[in-house]
Image 1 (cartoon, one colour):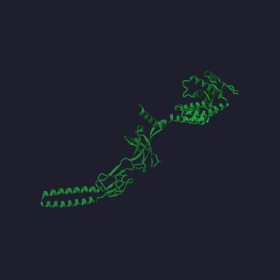
Image 2 (cartoon, rainbow, N blue to C red):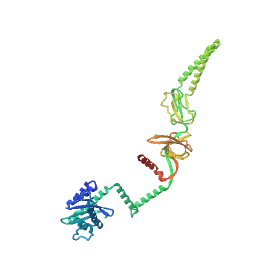
Image 3 (tube, rainbow, N blue to C red):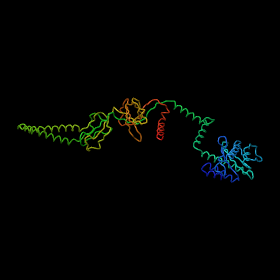
Image 4 (cartoon, rainbow, N blue to C red):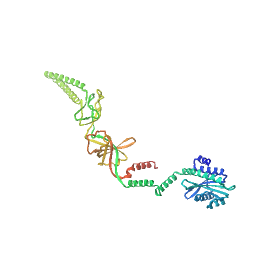
Length: 450
């Protein structure tokens, strides 16, 4: 029996294992033919014959053997034909027909019985001549059936198509749900059914979630008014400034010297102009007068540049960018950005809405923002603008949606980030939780559809 088990386990597929076992058993027990069958529906179907790789083409023989196996399985007993002394009276019409039609002298059929007592197949051994199956042969055959039956059944079940396995599994679970016992399974399925009904028919608030950043309503850029050098830096990014507060100063020594030069030139030209007028040299006086005007124009220009050497805040706000404390003495060019200042009492709420949800956003819709810095505070807002320009990030496209706060708290600062939820309306709960997956499947099917 162990040797036959090893023969069965050496084969990867069920058909090869069943044929090898039948052939080996026929050789060891001097049988003309050994057949192995398994229950399919309400009848036993012959799956393997000894010394034969296939059972097709032997329909009459296979049918007769299958009927003999049915007799053994139906009666849940080992049948020996012809009957031996001491054997219980059993129905063996199919065995008699098998022996008569195919010339078998002795037939032994043993059922395969599972642990729960239900038969799942049978094994039929045939001898055309020689001695009948004695007690030793029957004992060996019973041992082989008890040991090999479950092994071959497991191989048969594993060798089926996955569709068949899935169908059987569903049928088995259905019997647990609608049949007796298995209270836990019924409770779980009932709960899932109730949940499915709630998701299908109930409605909830659908909200679009988006990453959000605060930006100032206006953001003024402070630039260098003329080429020069950084003299002092009194504020940096994050500082709150008042209107007119000095933010930094530029070195004005060169311009001061330049002003002294033009001032002395003006006085010199003015003195020479007066001398020319006293002598009556009108032409020379007119030329000197133009030189005086030129010097005065240069002085006006230098005065205006000196007045802008101190860069002041244009309004009350916060310095968003800019730190010149580490650049004292560094040269700057005219128009170079030094600071960016945003107001503290007026903000834009900029939502980055995924392109899959942007069609749900409408003007005047309400929403709520929770900032990472203040997770305990919910801030309501209203959508005011849907921009048609998209931005790409991390392989996804987003649209900027602008909104306004209903009220502004003093703790807010430009650049704070958080998460917003825009209230779209009432939708089916199943749609709320599954529409992303459904849309993804639609796009995937469309992309692969010819």
